[in-house]
Length: 270
Ligand SMILES: NC(=O)c1ccc[n+]([C@@H]2O[C@H](COP(=O)([O-])OP(=O)(O)OC[C@H]3O[C@@H](n4cnc5c(N)ncnc54)[C@H](OP(=O)(O)O)[C@@H]3O)[C@@H](O)[C@H]2O)c1
Image (cartoon, rainbow, N blue to C red; front, side, top):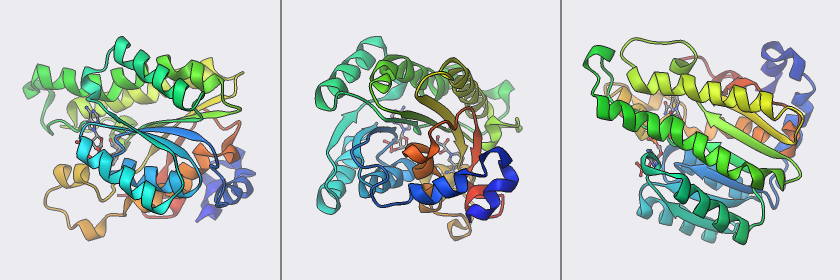
């Protein structure tokens, strides 16, 4: 698993040790982590994993019932404190982001982790045929919302001893691919946002990295590849080691990197 790390990120060779340390059961103890899209797929698994490792959670998502189900699981299986924020990120504005800032400040006083995970896939079709309103909705959810949340919540992240912004990207956000339209373009923009942040925050305690999960067994994957046998695709659980590393103190000082969850976990590339 982690023996592959040094060959892909030689400058992070020491992180192998740090990474193993990150898997200690209390590696996220007391950390406050906001995850967007926490009601389903990778975000849901990440929320549960973070709670198991000691974090308190802000669960943001579109469908209230899905967030409630995650909340109930956390209450039954962990001692995590959790807050639910039902919100359509496509409609997020300054006022809503400010209200979220105030709510997190009142409940927790700081923010240690911000995971930009929610994403809209949109249609798989040529740019020439792409509907304009859909394009704008995909950009609003996948790019504008991460910008607005980051901008508004950064002061709370500066209140933490160290803080980590993790942006969940995609391989089509690192190399353009035909028909992936607004989704691909939005992921390029998210990669850009993460890089700009890493550079701006270099001398601070806030780090910013991106993770490409690669094909993962979720609803989004099923929608993108309806003919695929889901059993051939890794579960979200397989990405948790890397995400734990990035959200724990083990990755302090690691910033501006583009991670590949599949490479990290040793699975073959899709
Ligand atoms: N699965 C893959 O193969 C794969 C591959 C590469 C990258 N990724 C990336 O991994 C991340 C997670 O994807 P996933 O596969 O877990 O997707 P998913 O199963 O579709 O889950 C996405 C979550 O985001 C929420 N969401 C979507 N649009 C939203 C909006 N406008 N406002 C608030 N919440 C919204 C969804 O809420 P609802 O459930 O209420 O709709 C859902 O909970 C995404 O950034 C995706 O681009 C996934």
